[in-house]
Length: 326
Length: 271
Image: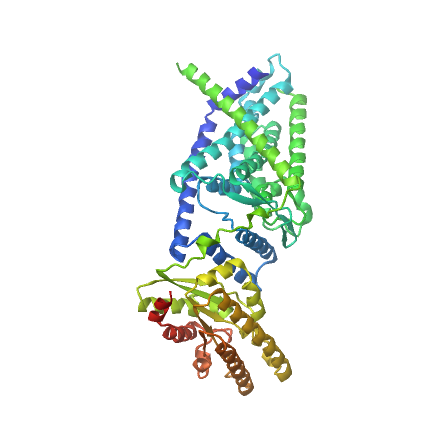
């Protein structure tokens, strides 16, 4: 088994995809670092060299003013209200959620890329894992070996798992390393709040507790990894079902982007919460943001994703072992 | 050689990946444990780092603005409002750095403002201020321009009593927080002075202004700044299209008036 996985890893490395992904991340991170650096600088200029409380208070008043306008959309109002109470809670507890530093950047970066950017990167690796073998014809060579089919597929799956871990790790390392040049490398012990529960338009704080930022980041990366694994598994399934890599990519891309769009407009269509792509934003539950649909929670989203993932896994293995190859 | 290198990379990548997998699994497990088990509440964090933050900055003049849409600047094309123009005027007068903190909220009533003043951050900013400017009362009286249609004296008097007691509490609170800064309370004008009922509405507004000024006189260093006269004639030239808030010109008038009241030498002596 280990040799099979080794073999698959070797194929992956040969394709040089992993390097491409690292290059993409290495290119994007400085971009975002610069953007955030500019933002901080801009704020400093506007308010004078002020401490963060003033800045946060300004933001709170701005939000309050937007809320008092009657033309605001319900959806958006709910989002603003929850963010407002959260900001106020941070302010009351004297915690700066955005003190600049490489760990903070890492956190914000990963929170923003969990629903689209990282799944896309994963897709690039996984999409042709099986389909390239069938379109290239090498699948026959692979299956003529005296090894059970499911073991071959499992070795591919494990190779996928390893490369996903590798991608997530590169995101962590690169975002920390590159942004630290600008923001400094400190800030791991900064306190953050987690455990907010969203109920309707209210933000419940009875379960709120403080965690140091390093734990917070580790938790978020765990969730990111989980999401990537589910997206990877689904892509893997498609890759088994379809012969054309382009079709696999197309379908995954469409559903991921649809998810990003849907999340902004499904609040009244309740059963949409069973789609996997609406549930990708797991880090939002840790940080306490408004959910796209009433009644979603971390447990709910993780279970929905798990069901999709397990289903995808089973379908992939059953089809692969039953299918005629010619 | 190349094959050796490849084998080496393969081993490294694999080992790193396996380690990463363990790490992420651990993170995931921790999330589950952390989010789904009961945690003790935040309580120990109450000792704040306020000692450093409430210190006044000596080199800058801090203007703290609070109140309703007038202070926010609703109706001004540039969104600055009188506070923005006031800052600009003051910058012409002095070399000192001026920073403006505007915490005004559209539609704020005197009751809302009193509540806002309980927030610790607002209190902190009030403490730091060198100059405080505020507008309040417009929404108590007009309720966005709707209420003056029924000019029932009793109802309006009732509102006035509530408003006045709130204003008194606001003044007291501000004075407690910051005994030194001069408070400029910008008064009400009558946006309806070119309408049929202008005699009645004007007299109501005058009465509110008078009573507020009386209340202000009971405190040290509170200046009630009249604006009624500014808008008395040609009110339509100084109003925004909603016929209620001032336009850019109107705000500039108010700003000029407040700016002329702020005396720099006095401020510097105090700080």
